[in-house]
Image (cartoon, rainbow, N blue to C red; front, top):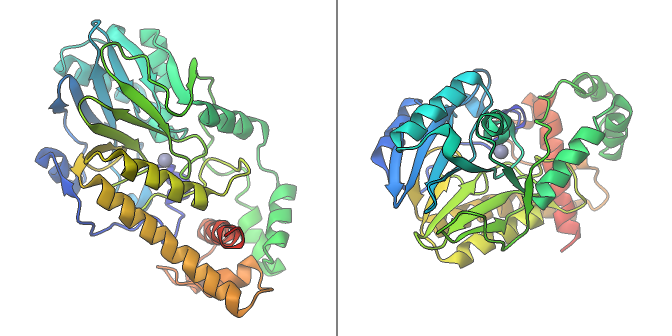
Length: 352
Ligand SMILES: [Zn+2]
């Protein structure tokens, strides 16, 4: 999760009463207790472990950790998927987890990162420094990182966006004062970029990269085709509905992309998933369908608002939608996030 945005995302990060089942009780109970998930043996040389989130505002204060995965290959090496947030403590915790799996930091052969948010990518550089292992990203995620580095938001561009959305002048200050205050993205250069459908360099395993844009432009989902396990990052989550469009604008509509990406995962026909947060679970296709419905309801709501007043601005449309905290309580970060979400859905409506 990109927690600075997620925490500001009304309606997008509610806990769900989804029907999916934690397939590892210890992780499910760590989640319920708000603790960091212990090292969990999954199967056949695969482990997961919770890596602590930085202290501070997480989505609703309810996301204690990122789930990092440790995958052994048949050449004496080990691969880490989503090492987690960057801190010396987390590097030490990951080293301990590797030890628990029978490995050492210097056996790490690749660092595979699902997406650019700091709670997945943050530890990658430290891990690369101590192991020499390459960082692997999807090609479009590296491009998104490059754009974030090049286009730091300015007051002028943000003001233009607010005018385009029809935000009344008296609401500009509360949003413009936030420019430059969002968390600095983790800017780095991956050593390896992969494309959709490519097999990752994990000797003895068929670990396939699936491009699943929506949460971010180059979000990567990894499928272990032999053990029938999917590493979903923040694309599919048992504990919240992922926010969309949280990696900058690449000219595609994140809502439409996300719906297509969910279909890709359903079509894999695999039942068990290791997500980026929460707990390992079964019922992957069902959870994808729930995410699809959640976002489709929002698209439909925006469609009917636009139907009844075709010339309405994004601000006016947003004011007619249902927000979990109430429209009148949205301000600053939560307001701009609500407007962003509305604009994405409106764009999805217009293009259908
Ligand atoms: Zn994320």
